[in-house]
Image 1 (cartoon, one colour):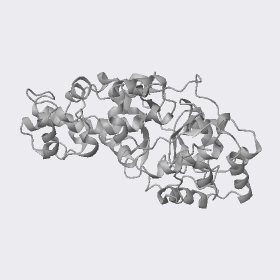
Image 2 (cartoon, rainbow, N blue to C red):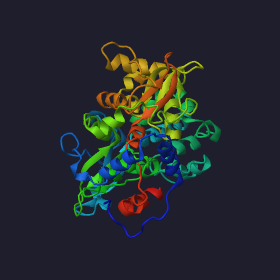
Image 3 (cartoon, rainbow, N blue to C red):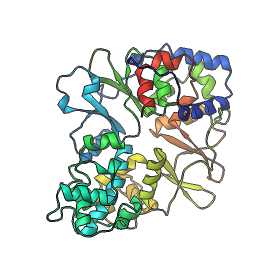
Image 4 (cartoon, rainbow, N blue to C red):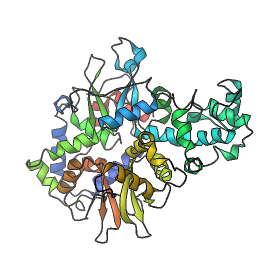
Length: 443
């Protein structure tokens, strides 16, 4: 069971129900098979799931800078990591030891907003304008420019906004504009301010975590069941689930959507898996979204517009298309933000950086061919098993369904694949989630 808490929810959230009910209604699996699979997952303990590579969960200190966090995520080839509070001391309660999860999603939110702030600072001359500090002028400047909520984090806005006010910058020259437009006008100065000058340079993971995270921190115990984990990763839209051992404060495993799909791939040859995997994706109602619902980016649009779309729609990647018929030419994912922060020499001309430019530069720097890798796609008559194999073997998080002309007809995500194997029993929400569901519904 998930860790227990006195407050137990007695209602479900419709935003989760709508997605999952649509999926269940489109699947054509025999009811007996679906029930058998769900019952089986409800008997598998979380402790039986394979440990993360190396056996130890990679954690990031809350006092690390955002740049350091990006470096750790990139070098470890992971998308997210638990954030540990170094001030927790020897506390045996995981609630005191962990502040949440940092991932590329949170970093993108921070980068986009910082781009706007950097634009204001540069307009004023410098982010550390003489006589402008983190005091009254900075605070008044933030209020004058309408900086509230996440943007008003202590230490992030004071100097930049204060400098803007000191320099007489009007509100409509800064935060009133979209981040991509503001950043596009910065050129090389974007990185100078964002990565080299205060207050941006020393912005910590702690300072951005609460305001920019997309999902709550919802751990499960080792004696919980895999059905709970699968539902959290599918219906409830979490991308990762930390695992704790009852009575101990440390995270002992970190189960991701990708790890689950790789685990499903390892079940090939078992009757229950093959019975579903041999079906065509269309038989299972995939892709769930129509072509009109898939969020895309044209190759000639600014790359920051792509990241803004991911931010606004809380998605992990976008198909890159050309033309009105949506011919797919590439893919851009949320983790690609690491190139902007770690390989700044590739993007010194930030003013006119399009998605196509961005993909070409990455390809030239990271691939032997120097050419943009073809997007990974499948046809509507592909089997679910072939899709799972591709997702697992290529270590990707989505595959695009296309017609014979390579025109986009849909997208299949890790979340969609996991949803094909389970449903949610009526008893499971209250009996198994405990505090987890309550935590989720309160965010």
